[in-house]
Length: 166
Length: 72
Image (cartoon, rainbow over all chains, first blue to last red; front, top):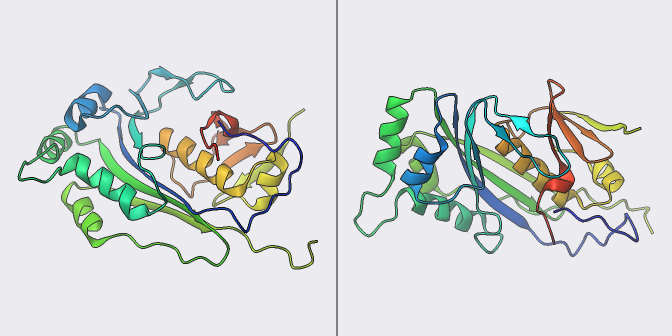
């Protein structure tokens, strides 16, 4: 959980590291979360069907799914702040390599059967002020076309320090 | 009584994270996870209250910044 600073709201921001993770989401009214779990063979970070009650955490009321969502985040699963490593992990879920077809054909089949389902990948990246934002590997954009899936990037840097600050 | 500290699209500024007494990356991480879980776009408009509550553009409670796991 997010912890607040008990002593001060001002921090040394210059030493803050780069943060990165990626997520895979399948959403839609016809979503049956267990089907995605069985296809991808991984436990989701969160998943619920349309109309299902789900928890957003101890400080929030129970929510009712407006649509179905199956969502997996690499945060805390993949080490490091290279967005390419996080995306590679998600890509391997679908295309494990070593000659096997993997879960991708099964997911594509499901998407053809349940036309309201949408797949999307997201990339989160936060860097220090002035840092160069990462780029998305070509292999990932090719995979997105193959699924098919959308990509959402959420890249930003720290705001520059106030020059007049002490 | 809680008050609104952010009510627009895009990434909240350091002003918002300072009020919540967290770093900006913690705020952004938490919001990204909340939006993904609730099937909302990363740049969609949300409302943040000074107790960490996050509401979508329709005024529905979709989570709380302090629920999310963004430990340093």
